[in-house]
Amino acid sequence: MDADVENITSSPIFRIVTTLKHNLFSTFDQHENGVAIQRWKEANSKLYPLHRQRLLLAALALSWEDVARKLQHEEHDDLAINLARAVEEVASQTTTSTPEPEKGFVRGLKVRVLIDRTGALQVEAAPIGHDQPISSLELDDDISRGIPQSVQPSWLPPNSRYTTVYIDNAPTAPSVFTQHKSTYRLPYDSSRARAGIAHSGPLEAEVILFNAAREVTEASLSSVYFWRDGRWIVPAASCGGMDSVTKMLALEGGFCSEGIVSVDAIVKGEEVWLSNAVRGFWRGKIVGSAMELDGPVSQ
Image 1: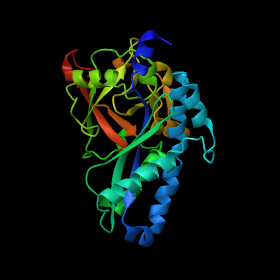
Image 2 (image 1 turned 45 degrees about the horizontal axis):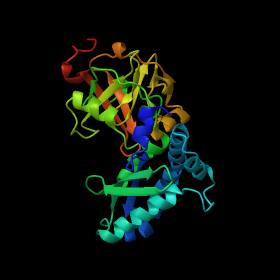
Image 3 (image 1 turned 90 degrees about the horizontal axis):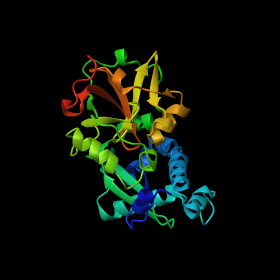
């Protein structure tokens, strides 16, 4: 293993990570709105194998053989890392420490699953914004099925709210830390700092990363999809970005295909899709290079 990689991963605070969304419901709604809630639970359960897969690939890339063995076990095995059970447990602790959502509302939780080199599992949860009506569960279906392939940029509502998307003005070198999610976030933090969006949320502003060959790899907090030749393209993993859960889902569902996207071919004002497992799928619009320090993108 590379000395720099070993130095970073040997830190006692280093973890491999996957992040997801979990919902909390009132006791009343679990009985009265059982069908809608059950439908969401069934759709959400399909994501756990993908989260498990990305953790397994990260463990293998770091040669964490014991962790990989735990992640490869079946869910019923005592040695297995059961993500669904761990998330449910931390969600139930959240419910006991704070009032449950009001009747007719759902509370979204951002859940981070962290694993160290010994295989120790840590799960953290925090509310996402304000409680939403149960009808908002329909929007969460986007996370489990992806966006229909027929959704072309020109068909999107003209008054839609878009996330502001910049293009970084310096390349990011691909590494095990850009190919697999972990607590080491320096490449992404640096890109967001160059774009002046270090303290912006993912729905407010994003920045697109690219490698030395000027191939787009991903966005700093999400996967990014471009409309090219009548179809949606997501940057190929070979370019150096990570395979997020929503990217894997979108590929499996036929929403997009992998390809090479040159940063020089991106047009200012171009519409893109962005996705991650906490926020789902949402729209973005290219506004220019990071802080316009490297000149504007193509007009």
